Length: 83
Image 1 (cartoon, rainbow, N blue to C red):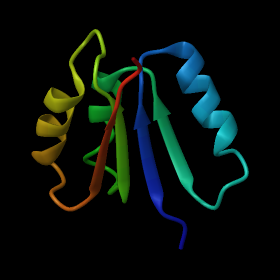
Image 2: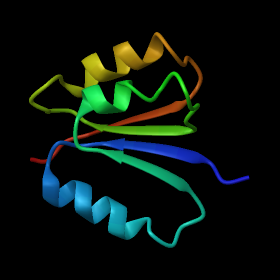
Image 3: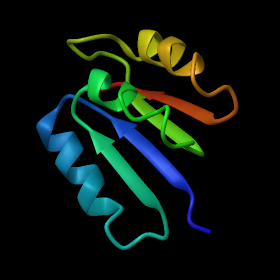
C-alpha cells in the first residue's frame, strides 16, 4: 500500500519542483499551494507524512499543524523554510 504524503507550500516554484521530484516515487502525493485548500481535504484522507512551509501568507506552518491536529493526531510532521 502506497503511503499518502501532503505537501503544502505557497511558493509556485517549490510546489512545482516537489511534484516533479515525487512523480515516479511509490507515494500518493497531495501538493497544495494553499494551506486552506489542504485543510479542506484532511477529513477525507489520512496522511502518513505532512510537510508544510513555515512562512506562508494565509497561515504559518505551526498554525497549519495545529489546525491539522484537530482532524488527525498520528502522523509525521515536517516544517520547512527557506533562508
